[in-house]
Length: 281
Image (cartoon, rainbow, N blue to C red; front, side, top):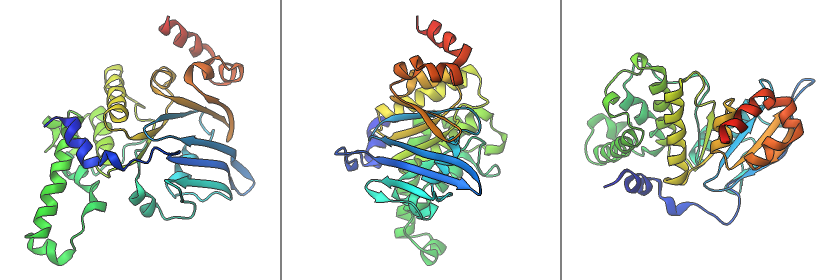
């Protein structure tokens, strides 16, 4: 069985509703005291789309992720995921709906193996209780084996077979970032929030991560929101791009159009814009 087929089976690809946006982020305002963090930000994400958010440090990108995952509660606006209003919903409930997240700084259990870290991503899908777990037979054993099979498929998909029994804390940084992505996939997400997934990586590691992101979109059909400072990667991979500055939207559109926006060139891309264009020629 191919990776694509086995992963598509576990992801239940036919569950995706393509009749409308997967996520609607509408006219959101977020403030802390007198500090305006998000100022009337709106966008949507379609099923299977790779949507990118770019902007300088402090522009409000991570704050958007925190609103989406239930860490922050905006004062105004609407956030609807699969048609459900998620503002005020607890983070674990949002995760159960199908929103998974990776972090700029790796957040793994260093003293557990790769396999164990990925199994933790399956916690929402374990149904048996403590009594069944104590004897590890019947339903508990069946669920454990079924969830482990899913994790093994993800290990194959991300090409980390050789590290499956290694303790995460001893692995190279690039592999740790891949394990964190795998743990997010193990949650069976409909939407992945990727917070600077290639930060601190070398060129080879960055290219590998980009390839996996494309595979996640094209083979698994999972929508992603990417926050990233690597402009070349964003412009190469994203279907659409939102540019923000001081919590305010500056531009929204196709990568080619955003690159030509004078405000974006001046405020964000600057000299790097010429590098991107030369690389495309």
